[in-house]
Structure formats: C-alpha cells, structure tokens
Image (tube, rainbow, N blue to C red; front, side):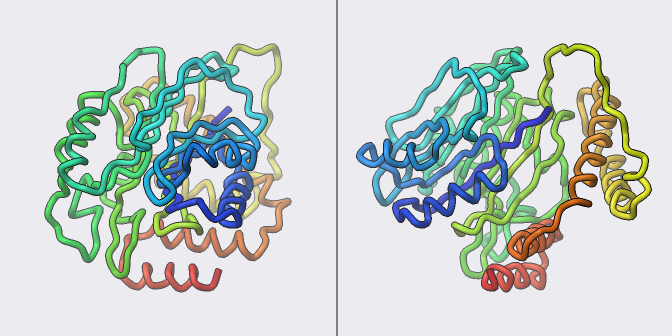
Length: 337
C-alpha cells in the first residue's frame, strides 16, 4: 500500500476556470494529498472553493493577491483527522491524521517569505514536535536554494538569505531532503523566470523512513511558473488474513518489463548504500519489483492520450542534467501544450 503526496505552487487560484482545471488535473493524477501554496484564497471564498474540490481540505488564507496555503485530500480517501493547525499569516497549515493501517502522519505545508530577513525569522520560528511514532512530511515553496551550485542556473551563485536557517531546521528536526538523497549530483529545477532557473520547492521527510520512498520526482505543473515535487511512500500495512500475490510470468517476458526493470535496477544498486535502515531494504526491493510488475501490466493495457504523452515527455526532459538545450526543449513543449 502506498500514498502519493505532491507540493504545488498554484500562483493564484482566483480565476474559477483555472481553479477547476487545476482540481481536475490533481484528481486525474491520482494524488492522495495535495499541498498548495499561493492560493490567494480568503475567508470569503473558502467555503465555495472547498465545495469545488469535493473532498476534505484545510485552508490557511492570505489575501486575494498574495500568500495562502491549503492541503487537499483525495475525495473518498478514508482518514481520521487527529489534529490541525494554521498560522495567522497564510504561510503554514499542518494536518495530523491516522490511516487505516493505524500509522500517524503529519503534513506541514509551507510558503516561506520572499523577503530575506523575514525568511530567516520564519525558518528560525519553524518547529516540529518530534515523536517516534509519527511520520513527518514537510513540503512547500521555501523561496530558498539549499545548494547554490546545484540548485541554480543563470542566477547569482551566492547562498540565499535563510539558507543556513533552513539547513539548521532540517538538521535539528532530523529530516531528509529526499529528492537530493536520490539524486546527489543532479541539476533539476522547480522554478523558472526568463532564463533563470532554481530549485526552491521541496519535500522533507522523517529520516527513519527514507527506505520506504518509492519515488521522488519533479513534475511538470501546467498552471504555474513552478514545477511540482512529488513522492510516493510505502506505508505500514495492518495484519491481514491468508493470501498472497503471484507474479504473472508472461509480463516479465515483455520488452517493456525488461527495459523498465533494467533502468530501475541500475539506479537502485547505486542508491542502496544511502539507506539508513538496512534491515528494510530487502523487503522494499521485493515491493518495488512487485510494483513494477503491476505497473507494467497496466501499461500494456493502456493507451495514453496525446496530452499525457506531452506531459511524460516534459517530465523526462526535466529529469535530465539541466543543460540549456534540454531546458529550451521543455519550454517548447510547454508552448505546444
């Protein structure tokens, strides 16, 4: 069993047609939890926007032209909310809940200030109550690069104001920068303006669950000048009765499976040593092989439409080394869409 989380800077949602298209896009992508920043939602329209989403949602409002964050839960997803919190500035909303597995999860959605002095102060005040039985996910638009050499292109290479404070927050709260753990030297960006690119949107996770991450990606988001960041996590499943999954041997003989598995295995071998929980690696490897087999089986029966092909091509380009040629190809595909 797994859950998909995504962080998206919406860059304003006041236009109803854009808002509805964004909601439909999120549901089509089948995300379980969506963290939105820069919603530009106010208390006067919050109830209307909640109804439009159709599932559970938690809003921390700014003004109609700035700030605002929200956490959306996939409609019909069964969770038990145990705690929720929002600040008064439209920059932070926190939701704690239990899944059917009885695992407790806490999601922090953050929109950090653009102003450097305010951003330092914001990170210094940011706190997590660490508890061994709670899994923390801290995500959002932090308006700050963690590594200017890897996370910037065509911008000043000096460290951002708030860089040290953000690093201290991560270390003090025993969090993992999960995408960078998977791709230690990769150059890929979440924000662009003109010819300048940077990675300022993150998902941080509790350190002790890094081996349960199925994937960590930067994904194309068609409604903003930010790309999204997403992870898929295995969750602890409750004890169940007899039964087992059997691999379909006809699937593993296909070229699609062979190519997919070969790509996965080359990357997996390189990353195994990064895991702190060595005991769980073997079980996770078996789960990943099972997930690959199931996914390939579905893809063999699935015909993607033209828009999805475009989005896949963009995401593949976004996962490369960030050369100017590839970035230009991404912009061309965005315009085609």
